[in-house]
Image 1 (cartoon, one colour):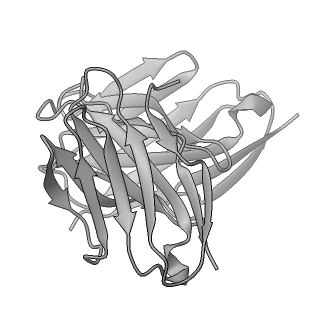
Image 2 (image 1 turned 180 degrees about the horizontal axis):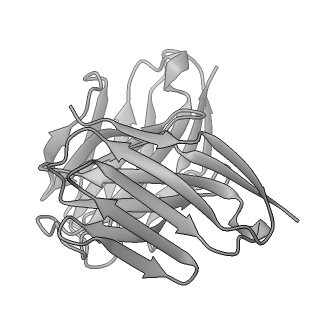
Length: 111
Length: 116
C-alpha cells in the first residue's frame, strides 16, 4: 500500500528566503508525482507534475525534483513571498489512476 | 480556473440524512475522481468514474456511491450521514489512460459538508 509522507508539517519563514519542502513515498512503482497548492478552504491547484522518467520540473520560482529509486521528491521555492503562504500537497499516481496524497506542509511566509 | 465546477459550495446536514454532491468535468475530459479531505489531512480517494462506470474505489463503505452521466458530469451520493463524513469533498477530472504529463487531474473548488 502506497504511503506518502511530507516533512515538515508546518514551516514559517521570512519573506525572501529560499526553502525546500520534502515528500517521501513507500512504493517506487509510480507513474508520476504532482505538487499541489491549497489555500484555506479551497480546492487544489496543480503546480508541477513530474513523470517517472523525469528528474525535475521547473515553473517560475518553483523547482520540483524526483528520485524515484529512493522514494523522494523535493519542492524548492526561491525568494519566497507572502503570497506563497498556503498548504503544499504532494501526490503520487501508481498503477491505478488514483492519487495518493501526503498530509501537506503548511507554509507561512512572513512579510 | 480549472473548468471543473462543483455544487453546492457548502452544505449542512444532520446525522442519518442523505446528500448529493455534483461535479462538472473540464471540457475534453472523460474521467471523474472523487476525494474526501478531512480537516488537516490530505485528500483520500473515494472512487473514480469512466464511461459511466466505477473504475476503482478506495476504502469507503457502500453508503458512498456515485454516478457519471453521458456528458461526463458526476454525482457523489452519501447515505446515512455520520458525523465523521464532515469534510471537503473534491472532484477531479482527467483523461483516462493517459498517465503521462497530460494526465494532470484538475480539481474543483470542493464542497464543504458539515454533518451535525
